[in-house]
Length: 122
Image (cartoon, rainbow, N blue to C red; front, side):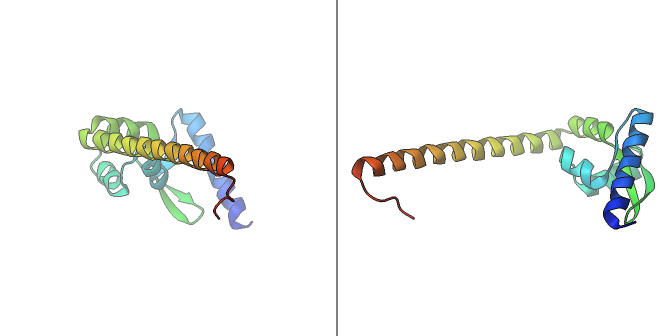
């Protein structure tokens, strides 16, 4: 069995366990990526008994799992984490607006070049 097959089998086991228990248990990396909570904060939470965790055999050794719904709820209850999430959303909105405006400028430049008959810049 190669590593990809082992990883696929492990993920299938996690999905099956989640379906049976009615909750989604994920790795610390995934919980951090999905909720914006740092791995250090997750460790503090499960070590302090604020969220449950479990240690399971993973494809590269033992993996710590936490319930994603509880992590998200705990993160939502934290004013600091809510503010950080709002800042990330604001930053993403600014990037989206800048990308849109850049696209408009590029369209206007292309139209001007067509009108003036000059070759497009490379």
